[in-house]
Structures are given as C-alpha cells and as structure tokens.
Length: 503
Image (cartoon, rainbow, N blue to C red; front, side):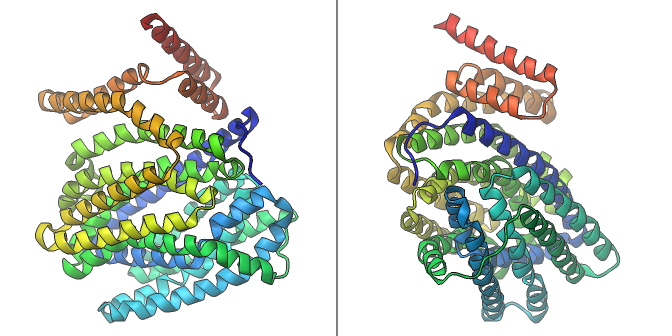
C-alpha cells in the first residue's frame, strides 16, 4: 500500500546515496564501454559497425520480450513486501528462462523473413544466446535493487565491464571478428550472473517454488508493460533496422555511431537516476509523487540542456575525433538526434510515474503512438533525406509521446515544469548565441568552456531554495573531499544571498 504523505528526509538522503553510487558505477562502466565502442567503430569500419548496430537492435528487442515487463513489477512489489522476495525470485526464474528461449526462437525466425543474409543470421543466432545468460543475472539484480543495495550492484556492473572488454579485445585482435566478440559477451554475462547470484544467496534469499497465483499475477500485471516495452524498444531501434535494409550497412554504421553518444547521455542522466529512485517512488502516491516527478523532470532538463547544446553546436568537432574521418556523416545525425535524447529524458520521468502508479495501459497508448509515428516517418523520410530522416523521425515521435504523457499526468506534475522552463529556455538561447560567436572568434574549445561557465552562472538566478537544498543533500551523499563540500555549501549560501538581495 502506498502513501500520499511527504517523502522523509531519510528516504531522500538514501535515494541520493543510491543515485551517487549508481552514477559513479555508470560513469566508470559506461565510460569504459564508450571507449570500447570508439575502438570497435574504427576496427570494424562503417559497414561492420552497421552490422554490429543492427544485431544490437535485435538483442534489445529480444531483451524486452525476455523481461516481459516483470522487472519493474518485481522491484516495486518486493520493495513494498520484502517477505515475498523468494517467491518472486523462484517464479520469475522459471517464467523468464522460458521467455528468453522463446525470444531467441522468434528473433532467429524474424531475421530470414526480413531478408537478412545467412552470415548476418549466424551472428544473430550466437549473439542472442546472451538473452538467457543476461536474464539470469537480471533476476538477482532486481532483487538487490528492491533492497536498495545499489553499491553492491554498482560494483558488479564495473567488474562485468572489466571482464568483458579485455576478453572482447583479445578475440578481436586475434582475428575472430564479430563471432569471437559475441562469445566473449556471453562468457562475461555468465560471470556477471554468478556474481549477482552470489550476492543474493549471501543475503539469505533463496528462490522458492514457483507459485501459480504469483505467476498469473505477474503475467496479468506485466502484460501491458511487456507490450509497451517491446513497442518502446522497437520505437528506439526501428530506424536502425529500417536503415540497414533501405540504405545499407555503411549508413547504418553512421547512425549507430550517433546513437552510441545519445544512448550514453540517456543512461548517464536518466536511467541511473530513475533506477535509483524507483523503490522510493513505488512507496508514495498522490501529491508526494507529483512533487517528485515535477522536481525530477526539472533537474533532468537542467542536467541535459548544456550537454545537448554542446553536442548539437559542435557535433563535427566531437564526432570525427571520436570515431574517425570515415564517420563524418554521423555529425549531422547527432545534431538532430541529441534533441530527441533531451526530450526522451524528460518523457522517461513521466513514464516511470505511470509504472509506479500501476497505469500500464496508459503506457501502451503512449508507446504505440510513438512507434507508429516513428515507423511512418522513417518510411517517408529515409528514402528522401537518408539517415538524417531517421533522426528527424525519432525527434518527431518523441514529441508526440511527451505531449501524450503531459496530458495524462496530474497538473501538479507538469505545470511547475512548464512555468520554470521559460527562464531556462531564455538562458539556453543566450548560451547558444554566445558559444556560436566565441567559436567563430576564438575556437570551439573556448566556446565550450566559457559557455558552460555562463550556464552555471545563469543557474544561480534560476534555482529556487528547494533546488539548492536538494543539491546540498546530494553533495553530502557523494564521496567528495571536505573542502569541496564546504565550497559547495558556500556557493549555495552565496546564491541564496544574491537572490535575497535581488528581491
């Protein structure tokens, strides 16, 4: 049973510690993975990277089918009723192992029907074995998340990357190609699963016998989530699958390169925070939930906007040094796609609010609308605009999704966000003009550095007392040196004084 009461200080501090732990692990693990993606793009070239990106899209869609929407349900229910953890673990182990096998079969039936050649299909059959292996680990990951043991899961995430990347590099440099890469991926997934099961078993949790009533409840409650998750992943990856079929492997490689950057942005600024806050959001409702959603969407905009401007204004200066001269066309895609990422970050906050409120059917409408528009726009724009059409299709579809979400949410969850966005948009326009002028007069690097200083200076005029209090709590939850914490506190007090004087 959820409560509509205010969120306690202890809950807030615990959530912030979870965010900091997951963020630190994500920065390390995703940072390593991002560097690996850069090396992989140069090693494989545009065509090989395009094949890698298309197989990754198949795996992502298969993972949604394997999870079948039960992950969020399990975290939510175990966070509310810890005594049922063993029953959920045992039941989901049987259910999701079966779903992983079904997903493997369906993907490998779909590939030849979609016209992919035998070489691609052989790689897909090997790569999709990771669906079962990864899910064995995800079952335990969800239990640990419900217990809010984010530090343990964060450590496993980093260790997984430290195992995967050297193994993958070894097989590739030994001449085993993508086939060896997927073997290394499956092996590292087994190691991750073993570590997570070890943590769960050491905590005293054991999988209980499958319960039919729980299985039935999981299937019924998660069916809308499963469908919406499939629609979401299809929405996110449809452009890559359509691009490789309509435009070829090289252009899909350019699109994949741009997606690597925006996906990292979404995971760093969105996925980590939402995952950390999910247990706490599951325990509240009504006005308390609307307050969390509004504040979270606001901070998402604050964090995402400067990065969006940098990536949009200086896409060539960022893309070419990262991926190489062969990926020059990816810069134009990134200029558009990064705005999709910013809107997607905000939309994900409201989507999580729907999950915690048990409004899965509303999510189905949202995802179906986004996917339908994305496919229609891709079919219309890809033949005319090339891969830039894929980026515009993603942007158009996420705009529709965000409008539907805001219409569905209580006014208290979105009206404060819209009111406070006016000065932020003004700051963004000033910032964009400043960086454009400085870039032409001096250099892109000078524009980036001075632009970010201007942005953070402008924030002192925008943040209210609640924003600054939350940032101070975050500063206390992070593993910062005492001097840096003191500087953060002094800066916040100075901002308060400045606003008081202005008032």
